[in-house]
View (cartoon, rainbow, N blue to C red):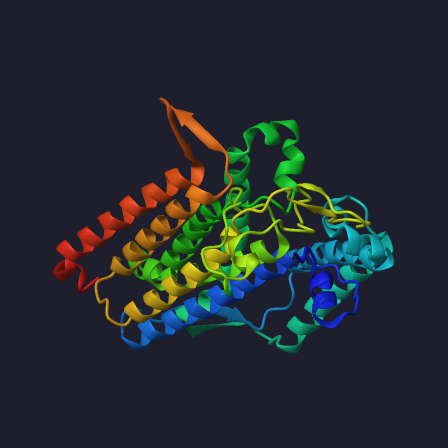
Length: 384
């Protein structure tokens, strides 16, 4: 496993370069990049088809920098400088435990003040370059795809919060022992929490900018599947604990690589299992028994499902149907993978199930309802 990017580089090139990036975090970022690309392509395609339309906005130009803008820029600059300079001065600590450095109250006061002044000066000079004797209002055209920068930020913020809340609900016993640590930790993220909360934020913002909910849901369907696929690569490479149950069965075919059938996840970032003999430092554990590498299976399946959705998008004309198919694909894939994944189980009336099994079942039923509804009302929705 490669808990950090440095481990991955050392494996490929035999060179140890201390970098403060964990592998999982890098692939989460790449997942957003993949989603951004797919969303943007779909927004452009739907606008070209006349299903989405640019909107007119009135903005005021030529104003000098206001006091509130300079204060907000100063605060933002201070936070960056306060942490950045401290991290650079204590670089080895930052490499070894970036999360603690970023989330602690420790920082460099002079660095914070310097960057605060720099950001205030930058805002003042930039606004001064375009300042007019008399500010005026102009009408600008904003295309749907130009919203993506705004959408991706709020999707990330609310997606992260949702993923943390759902994860802590799933691991309630651990959460009540350390609620602050559970909320602030970068580890432990539940996909469905991120999907629901991040998706809700995107829909609200899109609707405020003239994009109807059903079209936005269709736009996001292939992109969400692709983003999930990319994110699962990070889960596998880092060994974040999202693996399967013990698998001591012999390989069904001899040519199948061992890591594709069963893995002990050595040097996993979750630090679970037993110590690795001779290993010194962090990430020196591996599982005592091999388990199913479920993230690999999800990467393969979800990429295939993305290709199917990407192909279907040009044929489906009824708004909302694409999203319904996505929900059915997503629910089915996750439900069956849960059968061989390690997860907390709930017990209700003698029936055991995981949080993901419950939500995936609800998503499949919801997706089926979407497909049936949109098909039944296809003529009505044709002018949606």
